[in-house]
Image (cartoon, rainbow, N blue to C red):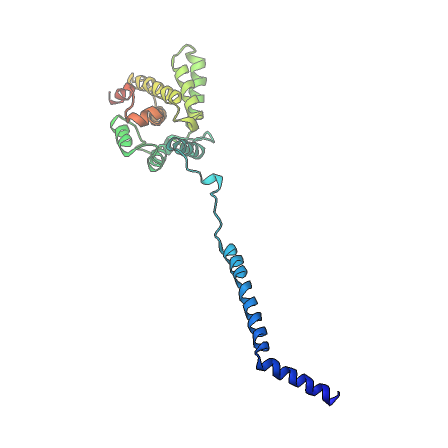
Length: 231
């Protein structure tokens, strides 16, 4: 390169340095950089903004009535859905109802005081549904006009609809059947020990079912039929 051009270039650089032009360029570039920083912060703050979480629909709180109905349905599925509920299942049923809060401690105590019969000896394994069917068949052959036919039909209906046990209608039916079974057993019919245990077990199951209705739960009292169990 021409030595003269080199000298001119050097002189220009020296002059620029002398008047601080190069430093101004540097400062300007720094200033520009600082001006862009807020946008970066803005972006990061946007990213860091927490998202509002929404609860899934299945987490919606149930009302006490709906929760109670849900527990009764679960109980019915576990104990009655297969039609194999027997006398031997009564203690577990009462314990489950108490644990789930369907029956209060006071109600369970009242059931005991009013004569609920839990099997004291080796309980029968025959399901109450099968027992009812056998008795209905026998009554149809021997006593077709017996009022116990309607009682047993109602009892079977209660057992088949235990998932709706808090319904006042079902509770009233169970209470009615409980009273009729109490009258029958108090008449001292001729029964074998195993037959008596099944009749007592059916009566006790109706007694439990009658106490599960919403009206019974609210008042904490059973109908006058419960007094019959003390006879």
